[in-house]
Image 1 (tube, helix red, strand yellow):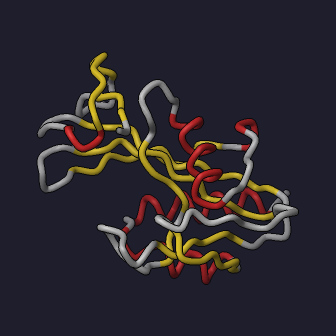
Image 2 (tube, helix red, strand yellow):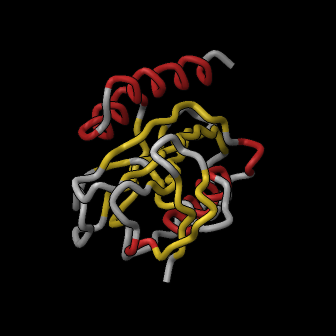
Length: 169
């Protein structure tokens, strides 16, 4: 059973831990997303499982819930490893955006978005079949066009800023 830290609507810890499926209205959980850019400038997209509860079959970014006791950075590293088999050094992560989402249930999430530029994994990708159908590498414009289907303009600005800063290196 996945356990999560419970946050206030402002993102502060309540000191309470709960099962991820038992989060109550008014409670928030931490969530982490990692935007993976390869050294050659291509971005990693993953196709969500066709059995996924949310957005099945859509091309999207890597991420998920942060487990109890983890920092959002630790959660981002773990999610990349679980979903894609990719090892990302926590030092390579850069916080590029934060936002809050409110769910219809009355609960919500505080989402930390990290960017990381890494070499192409020598062994390729190892997909978590329950979460990921496929991986695709894309230039920034294609990546942006695919993953923005459920994200707001502030998220888009953060992506464009990350691309601008990384391509300038």
